[in-house]
Amino acid sequence: MRRQVLLFFSMLLFCPVLGQVSYSIPEEMSKGSLIGNIAQDLGLDLKRLKTGKARLHVGNGAEYIELNKEKGLLLIKERMDREALCKQTTPCALHFQIILENPIDNVTVKVMIQDQNDNPPQVLYPVQTGGSLVAEMVPRSADVGYLVTKVVAVDVDSGQNAWLSYKLQKATDRALFEVGLQNGEIRTIRQVTDKDAVKQRLTVIVEDNGQPSRSATVIVNVAVADSFPEVLSEFTDFTQDKEYNDNLTFYLVLALAVVSFLFITCLVVIISVKIYRWRQSRVMYHSNLPVIPYYPPRYSDTLGTGTLQHVYNYEVCRTTDSRKSDCKFGIAGSQNVLIMDPSSTGTMQRIQSEKSILDEPDSPLEMDTLSG
Image (cartoon, rainbow, N blue to C red; front, side):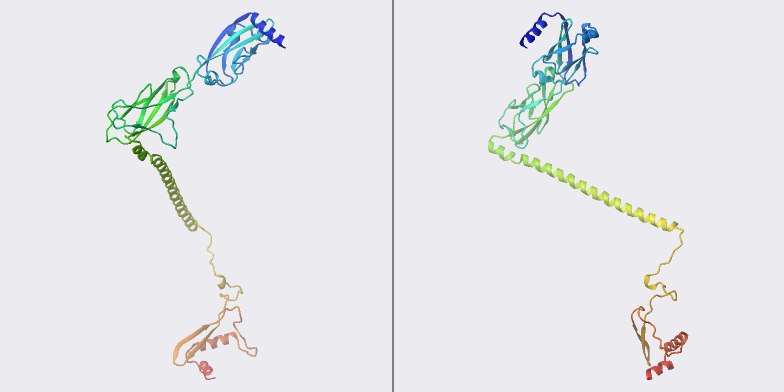
């Protein structure tokens, strides 16, 4: 095996070289993208690539580049990230060889990878700690040009894509501080006075020189004070105030959303009821169906002999000197309401006539009944 390897490398050393070719491509090209036409650039016939069993010699680009022997093309096999391949080394290039057999030929290929502005700047200082608060102290006796702090950032891209600039985007007092465009130094631009607030908040934006430009934002807290206890008392509730304001805003938005939802729901319900009633009234108005009277169950004529289902018994008590009568209603007619004497030969008309006589005041029958 060792002899075969030595023989192979000796063949590479003494085999004729067809030529050298180099290409330049941007990083992050998608899989299958074209690098170049190797057959055309070297003046090779496609049959030579097939009969010579052209293949890529193992190098630092074998896993990222492939050869299409049918068309003589070099293609992207895997997406390449320049920072992952070369880090800060410039220029970044891949070197490999194409080997042909019968006879053995050697082609040297160099692929330059151009940097793309695909990474934003990274802020190293001041560290953005999130919950905890870090502030830079500035004494009230500070003169003009006093160095407060320095924003430090890096960009992993190369060339002009890694050139950074610093700008003061927002500040509590813009007339008190400035930021160096190239070095990120924050300095005072006037004399600090007793009227200046203790809490100073600066927002610095870091931009690179790529196209399109990428940026990062850093917040710098500055305390204008002569002693640490003064700074501590002023900045203790800084984070708590921020959290309180965030929570208050959230609950206000939530309450507004709930009230709006309830209002819209009530409005929709009221409109739906109004429309339903209006449609019902229109249907009843335009209906041509006959009106069927409704009788309560207690008054339906089930026997077919009268208009009332139930008959009520009552007693009448009268006196000779009064036309007022007391009526006592009995139970419903579900029980016996008419008691007939079997020996009686009278008719219903007779009974009813007697009843009408009884209804008259001071009738003979009534007197006889009372006397009896």
